[in-house]
Every structure is written in C-alpha cells, then in structure tokens.
Length: 340
Image 1 (cartoon, rainbow, N blue to C red):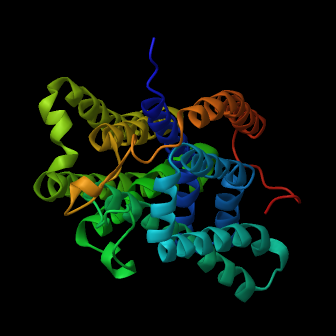
Image 2: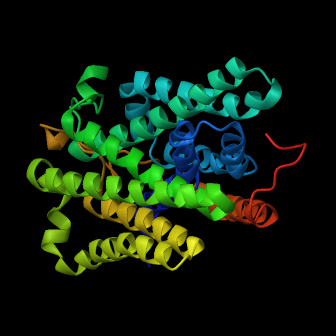
C-alpha cells in the first residue's frame, strides 16, 4: 500500500499551525484588548489569565516551524528569506510582548507599567496582523522566479488582500481572547469582557464577510476546489454554524462552550484554507508554473519517513504537556503575591 507522505506532512504542518492559532490566538487577543481598560488590577487579571500558559502555547509555533523545515525545506527557505523583514518584525513583536508580561509588575511606578502595557498591546496586535498578512500573501500568491525564490520586497507584501486578511486575523484573535478572558474571570470584569466579546464578534463577522467576498473576486483559485466539490461546502457551513453558536452560548451563560465554538471557528477556517491551498505550499503569481508544491519542495522520501517517526513521538509529548498545563491552571484567575 502506497502512503502519500507528502499529503500526510501537509496535513501535519497544518494541524500544528492550527494548534498554534487556537492557543496563542487568545494570548494575542488578550494583548490586543489590554489597553481597553485603564485599571491596573484589571490589566493584571488579564495578564494572569494567560500568564501560566502563554509560553507553552508558543511551543506549537516552534514545532510547526520545525516540521515545515523538516518536510518542506524549500518552502521554509523561500518563505523565511522572502518574508525576512516581516518575520523579523514578528519576532520583535513576540519578544516585546513576552518581556512585557514578565517585567510589567516588577516595579510599582506608573510610567513603568504603562510602558510595558503599551509594549504588550502593540506586540500582540502587530503579531496578529503580520500572521494574517503572511497567510494572505500565501493565499493570493507571490512572485516566484524559476528557482522558487521570492522576486519582490517588503512593500510588495503589503497589498490590499493580505492587509484585509491581517485585519481579519486581529479581529478573530480579539474575539477569541475576549471569550477566553470571560471564561477565566468573574464579577464586574467578567461582565465587561463579555461585552467586549460581543463587540469583537461583530467586528470579526464584518471582516470575515469582507474577506470572503474579496477572496471570491480577487483570489478565485482559493475557492476552486470547493466549487468543484460541493460536498466540501459542508466545512464552510460548519464554520458559519460555529460562529453563530458563539453569541448563542454567551446568551446562555456558557462561556466554556462559547470558547469551544471559537476554537471550532478557527479549525474550520484553517481547514478551508488548507483544502483550497492544496497541493500548493507557496502559490506563484503571476506564474503558477513556478509554484512550490508538496511534491517539488519536499524532502527525500527517507527523510519524510524518519521525521514522521520522530513526529509520532514528539507530537503526543507536546499534546500531553499542553493538556497538563491547562489542567493544572484551570479555573478562574485568583490574584496573590506570586501573580504577575
């Protein structure tokens, strides 16, 4: 029996990045909402809601990047060299938000805390925006030469469609973060976060509708597979139902189920992205023949087999670690002397 290792690795890389989007997505969303409140105690609560888990969430990004490098080295080389400045900005944003979490409460001075509050919020928003812009460029296509190298610069990545997808990603993460915050808090601040979540849902729905129309009009190849196989529309329907279920569960006071619906929204969106992208890893526009696919950009068969065995050992370890952390730090946020 022939096993299509290329497709397996395409799915595995997608699963890892989907896990990152679900987990670190609410971290970034909480950061994007950070400056909406001016009370120091509420800001501390927001940071402590993600404090025990944020660094573990970013493990998924590291593992996803490692899997991409192992299975599709040409894609890794093209994306990380072509998007070099954008990825440097992303790393700076992630570093500053991480430092802000650790340093903010080390000193009591107001100016000190405000400086790190701004760093935390700006780093979170910029990170979410750049992730969305990168995905928008992968979807729309970038100019690649015959060697599969990016033939453009940073400005060439800042096109209307990728920017729209970047804004939509910010809106999605804000919604996800507000729901997570509501799930982890209680009292007056809990009610405030629920109001923020409803506004974020509206913001996301507007952005998602705009992105869907822009995709159909300007990136038609991203809808071709669903058009050719109507049964795949069931995934889009599941996505719409997941979005609709978020305010429904909120109205019933089920914050946890609303959060699960938000996770389902992200999973179905990533499934649609992967289905429409397959078999392309990096689509070349305006010369599709230069595109990097799961076949012409992959490692050797032997490498794929060996790395699949390693992934079979490593991924369950990451899953177990993640599950343990969330189990240990379950429940509402309680402030004490060890809090951020």
